[in-house]
Image (cartoon, rainbow, N blue to C red; front, side, top):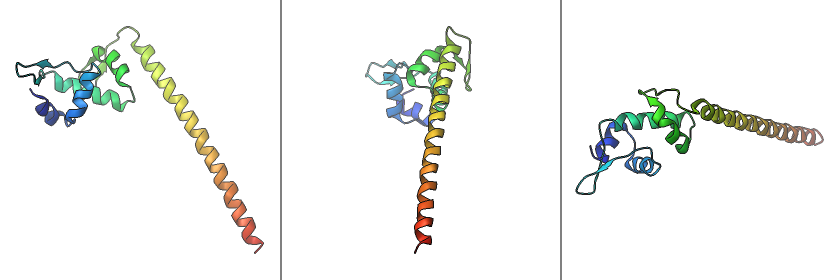
Length: 125
């Protein structure tokens, strides 16, 4: 199938499909006319890519994990260093969440302090 058909079947824009190709996630054949021609398995591959992106994985991580993916979910077969990669990504997300939580608390503290000053200055008027 051509890139437009793959786009229609998956709901993924053609520029994103070309990006996946550039990242080594999709490997179309080239027809004699130079057009990309995708096999029937491309729909499943794009679905797997989208789901792994939704899980917060980067395209290099997905390139590493994609050979381990089976099914639409996708299910990940135990490939070398699979768990290490996933656990490292989860650890990074946990650290980012902790940083965001501290930032949120700091903002709340600044807002509370500013609101107290408004009340204090209003009570003297």
